[in-house]
Image (tube, rainbow, N blue to C red; front, side, top):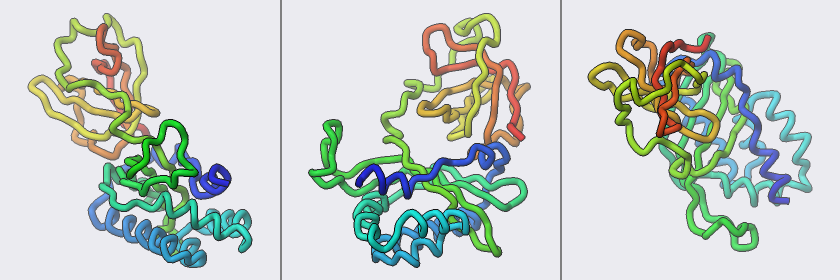
Length: 244
């Protein structure tokens, strides 16, 4: 039942929502959080109608069809395990047309009950990355999907952002790298962009001549890059562009 119910409340993130992202202003982030929090409050109070009221029409229809009254007790038992005790916003993005947005959170989830733990779960609070997709319907932000990732602290990432000289990298641009920008660091000769690539973080050095003021957290960027000869999660960009 755990796998079945979890699959109902975790929907795949549509890739097109990322491909048209722009940085969201603070009011957008506040509105997304209000919708997310309202849904979580409804889960905690076991108010099924309150839960689906925060969803898009398509997602709401799926929930109503897949979770009949007879399944709502196990649904809430499992759903409450995915309601954060606390969370921090990692990134926010809004589509260019203003009709969709996404919220990436680093959340502290409650412990799994002993009978639901697997061999890798030591018990205690669980740190997870949550990605919540939203769509605007009748002027209001509604939840389209919620994806639960792994502990972001356990994601492979470079040990530091000391990128070294170009000679530390392969001779040509041998790799295509792309993902959402998680954070940036300006350096003397350019900027380093840390991007999320599937379940890892890659650091890409972009020479100053290729840097754009539009390369900001929350946007999706792609590079033709040379991989570091000794540190595989570091790259040197030969070209950089935002994904449209």
